[in-house]
Image 1 (cartoon, each protein chain N blue to C red):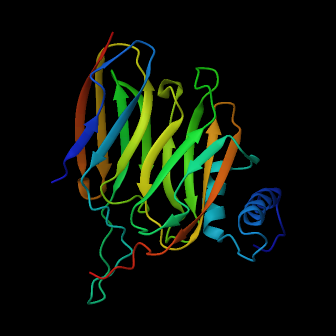
Image 2 (tube, rainbow over the protein chains, first blue to last red):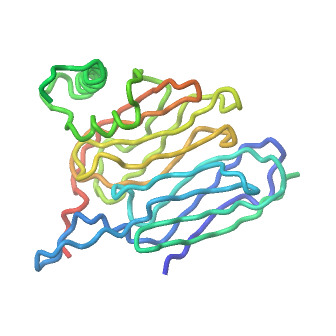
Length: 106
Length: 153
């Protein structure tokens, strides 16, 4: 259902600051909308995102209902060594999704 | 609250007042209490100074469901001096918080981009917490022609 997309450069130079882009399909239902019959649609959002680089957390974010559907995030990190970037999204109703990307540092 | 204005309320009030004066040219618009409360939760007793943050948002928003937001904080991002967190607040959405970002010295560059929702024409404020404990803020006024949260189902 929720398909994450991550964009990380395959190769970077040591010490270089590189850009990481993430996108995940999610409705991000705010919990403030009503159906035509007047029933409140329950909240269903992603509440937390984190990114680790070789196990060390480099970035995290708390999401609120004001974040758009299909949350998109761009952030940066410094290339230290070749390794894995792990991405994790956690949300309402037990939502959990992960993604990985490897980066080669020259 | 009946016990008069505490120092904290004064600081937050002064901050909000300053922002209103800057961005709506004296128009009487009260910053909603919820936004102030949310800011107070993050900032505590500290003084928030203006500057060091650049907010890149469209001045005119056609669709409030997806508004692009780029935040750049002026920081060397070294182990000794870095941005700890960035919080974004709004005035008129159902909830005052937009997003909370947690960074560290490993981030390399204090710049993030995302997309968020706006329910009405309003002002948004970003507050950054530095590793030395200081807080910096920036605000931007956005005009929304089609608001989020109102579309029929």
